Image 1 (tube, rainbow, N blue to C red):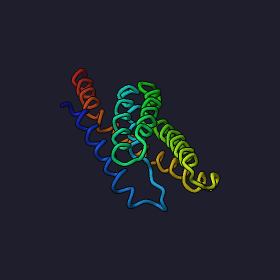
Image 2 (cartoon, rainbow, N blue to C red; image 1 turned 90 degrees about the vertical axis):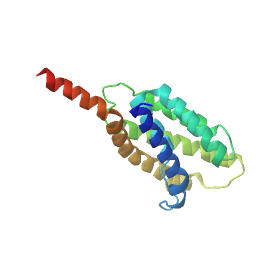
Image 3 (spheres, rainbow, N blue to C red; image 1 turned 180 degrees about the vertical axis):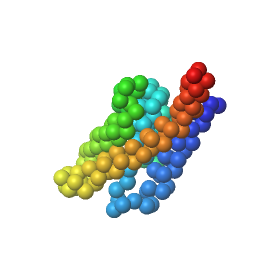
Length: 174
């Protein structure tokens, strides 16, 4: 097992724990970031859309089977989030934390709107403008903010070894 695989595995376990245990109990007025979504988007930016899409589908199906009524919904959403993050893989602006934060925020906005449509189709009654202003938008913004932090940490952990090896090579060449 490589260091990178170990770090990705640990980050997946942390995201699952935070999403299902900690943030479901402790949140700010019912608003919480989607830690799995932001992890998948960040992995898409750092490792590519194919890798993040596979991780997203697996995590989504896991969440659906163990925590949700409908199987496949989160798998599809996390797949698309990973592919969306992967659009910025190996681009010159991928080092910018605004890219994964914006991608996570937009993906969260889309996810929460899809969930609102599903609730409405299932017979739930709510005011969409109120839901958008007091739940959907704050969740998307919270997810985007947390994504910037998670992206910085993951980037440092995943690529610290490569950067240090490159800098040793450059120092020895001088």
